[in-house]
Length: 227
Image: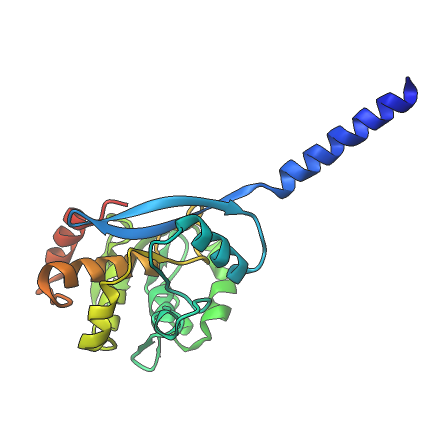
């Protein structure tokens, strides 16, 4: 009887370990449908390697064509479109975004403009300065609502000078844009969403739009970004 009980306990423990090892994480693929940018949630097994996450995500997406927008992309264009790689006024777009943040207890930290983006991400001030309450960029102040408007704005403006006509046409071939580094449970801004918004512009207008003001872009954003 004791031996059977031990065997039962052993089986139950193995099952629990298996359940833990099969814990799912959520990743979002952005797409354009009926003139709006939407996000589709996919759940994949928890693994540490980002490229393995990408592989699992692609399996979940299936036959629909997708482009990973990050340094982990298996396409050169996807890598080039990472905010860590997009040049902006002598630095990279990611640093520009981070340096525009104003926190409850400090900022903007302009020294981030001259630091490698990975170092900026790990700067202790990000944890001790409280919540982001606004952004300051080129003399203008942006609110945090709509949540992703500022990030999408600077990303789109930076990419506008990078993509040629052929590349813009190629973007139309993709159903989804992904960023495996984004954890939607803790982060909102995402370069894959920004790329979906670019695709929407190209679908609808044949080009990346110019906006006469911050307010004009925000109104466009409210109308066309639903995730």
